[in-house]
Length: 359
Image (cartoon, rainbow, N blue to C red; front, side, top):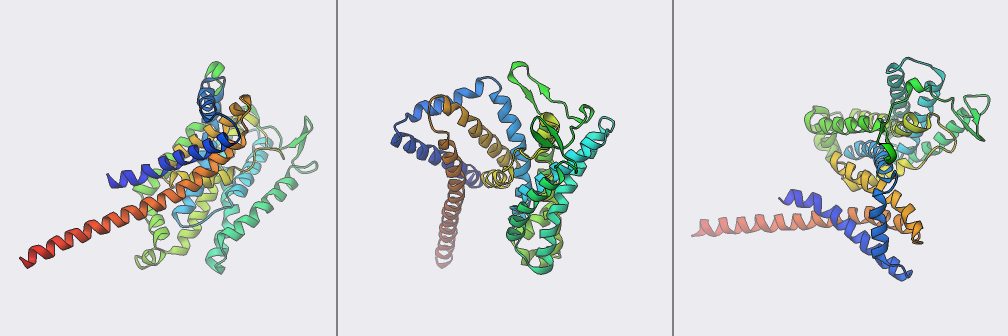
């Protein structure tokens, strides 16, 4: 019961706190918090909003899993942003240049995306285990390098194709798209949502049912103890970074194979940093990350509905930031409270045992 309370109470407290903070901001600005909340909730049932939330959540879920794998190893892989973009551009180039048979084409594109992300994560991993360079520094720098590489690849004379005043990779043939799930006027759910769910299941199985998952978590919690138990900490760092990069490479594929079919200079960015927030909100747990991804996607869509009632959409940004900050603080507060309660419980038991022995 205490463990369940420790898992559920912090995110609930964080959401409540962020809602209160935004309510105060709305009241100060002369708006009605109740109207804003109603507009955010009601908009889910309008048009394609619900499907848009699911589609965005699939992207956030994949990038959240990628970040969480690094967190489990006590690695702060900020480079997920660059890794998923590199994976996306290489997958788009290969998919656009090769007209492969159905199924084979999708598999090749997915594998290329994962390889691109993994290769781009390999350099910070190698530098960390061989030279002790912080992965935070190297991955931040590689994010900027990724932007330069993408600009170089998708330009005229390389792999760039001009279309509607925008430059992108060649369009992927329809035979290599991943079909969506049509829901009529409600929109079409990305077919890649199914793959995102499978990735989450695989992540759970890896953590809870495999030796590698045990070694990953043990190395993250105590590298010294893990090494004493025969775990090669350096090898685990490299594998964790490569796996994190590989999953990051999948991030843009729901949109690439389900909607855009090309990767351009103005393709969506910033998912990597959102993934950090989602992983923190979900505490690196597959179910928690799913909740965080859906919540984040809901808040993104809510920003549009707030415009309709003339409420600044920046309120959503405040809420998102407050949730992340609050969840970190809440987990630490709950952890300390539970630790203090456990110490008091053990102290009471020892006192009772001492009294019994003396009598």
